[in-house]
Image 1 (spheres, one colour):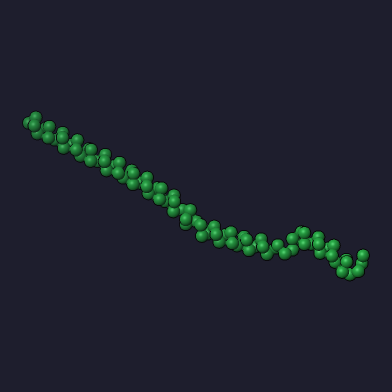
Image 2: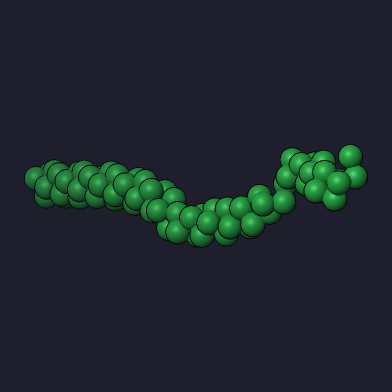
Length: 85
């Protein structure tokens, strides 16, 4: 009877050890999964960010021809071309 109880205790201890090993392994895998997800997010966002930059660059370069310096030069140059000065 004592022998049977000892066997049961050993079996219970072995299953507890196996369960803790499984929990440790799954926690490590879940940790790796979280890292993987955090690395995938910036890669997924990069194309949208590139499109936004290109659109912004196109909009800003469209107004470069008529900047404030160009207008000042045009105002100074116009009276000369009309022989006002």
